[in-house]
Image (cartoon, rainbow, N blue to C red):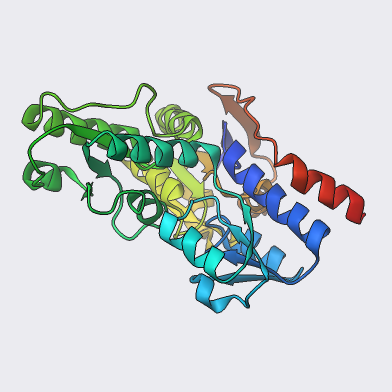
Length: 314
C-alpha cells in the first residue's frame, strides 16, 4: 500500500450529532438512568459509551418504568409509540433527526388530504416502521424494484415518500418503475433522502475512481453504511464494511496500492482513525490524503428548554 485516501465528507451527519447531543444533555439535565428507545444511532461504539454513563436502551416503551425519562432515537417513532409513552407518563425527549421528522409530516399531510402513499424503504428498518406508523392503513412499502412492479394500491390520489438513508441510484431506479406505472404520482417538493446520505454516496463514487480498494467504516446495522459499500461496489471497486481495527486483513496492506476509506453517518471519527492506524502499522511510509467533494455546514440546535435544564443542572 502506497497511499490512503480519506473521503470528505464522511462520518457524523448533522442529525446524528444532534441525537448524540440530545442524549448528553438529557443525562446532564435529569441524571441516570435515562432510557432510549432503540439505539440512539446505529453504531455500537456510541451505544456502549452511553451505556457506561447510565443510559438504558430498550426496544419497547413498556420496558421503561412509569414516570421515567425516555429519549426517542434519531430514527423517529410512530404516533402509536408516542401514545404509549404518554400512557406510561414518561418524560419524552425527542432526538428524531429533523429530516426524518420532515418525512413524518409529509406522511401526515398526505393522509389528511386523502392520499394513499408508497413508501420506498427497507422492510423492518426502524425509520420505515416509524414513518409508516403515521398512516398505517394508507401506506404501502416498496423495498426494491420488483416490489415497485407489483405493489397494489387503491384507486385515487397517490404520493411517494422515501426513507432518508437509501441509495440514491437505487431509489432513482425504483422511482422510474413507479412513475411508469403511476404517471400522476405526486412527490414532495424536496426529496426525502437526506443531504448527508447523498453527499457521502457522491464522495464514495469519486473515491472508488481513484482507489484499488474501498473500506467503509461503520456498523453492519447501519443502513447508510451498507449503502456506501454497495455504491462503491457498483462503481466496480472491491469494498468492505468494517468497524474494528481487528477486521483489517493483512492482504489489504500489501495487495492494493491505493486504499480509500470513508465512514457512515453514524460512525465516530475515532473509529476511522483506528482503522487508518491499523492500515499504517508496519507501513509507515504510506501517505494519507483527503479527497473533499463538498463541504457540509448544516447543524441542528437541540431544544432550548433541554439546553436550559442541562445548564441549570451543571
